[in-house]
Length: 87
Length: 172
Figure 1 (tube, each protein chain N blue to C red):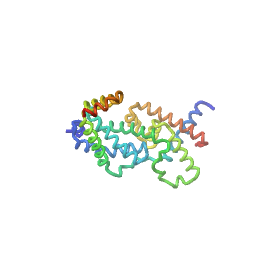
Figure 2 (figure 1 turned 90 degrees about the vertical axis):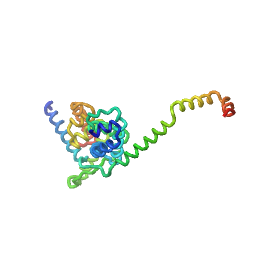
Figure 3 (figure 1 turned 45 degrees about the horizontal axis):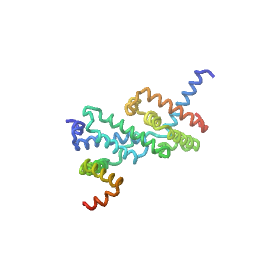
Figure 4 (figure 1 turned 135 degrees about the vertical axis):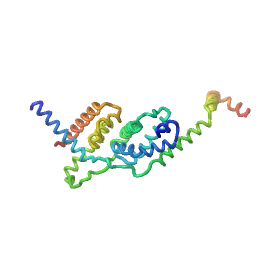
């Protein structure tokens, strides 16, 4: 079989695959939205605002102090009664 | 002032205007890749959410639909990566008269299965370029690659499909 003929056959095969694909998986060009997605978007925005508000209410310094206190109690459990006494 | 400029300045009303203007376009782009209405709706919202998050570094003179299409394409590819290969393909062939033969139905099924088994990057190119007949320039822009790279992916995808179908004894 010549190289040219092999190429020709391959191209024909690819063309067949292309046609078969279009037949097996029909295009969805006319598919549009069935509903307005804005309410869903708004919900997402509100959720994120709430999360941001909660995060911004507690400052990073408070989180740092809480972290230091938790670490101190973890590594020096004897501090717990002393801390409770002073509270 | 342009809605994109107003949105970049933090105006929620402008964001709503942009959302309403492009939601259908973005959805239609995504559904043609993922072929699942519910997932396409979710990904549409996610695309606009990314736009909202990126507002501070958005170029007000930029091309908003192109930006959205690019983000939507990446999200759709991600979805294909995680939802494959059990994802059902939307829509059956519209002309049953041409497809009632059992052998044809089997071939169709094998082709759909082979397509679903392609890597998401190749699948996107085949679905948009071959099935939906989108221009290569548009596909290239949405994937952030050159037209030559799109053609190469298409050629590779068709080669893989040919091999898979040959293995199942399906030939022209």
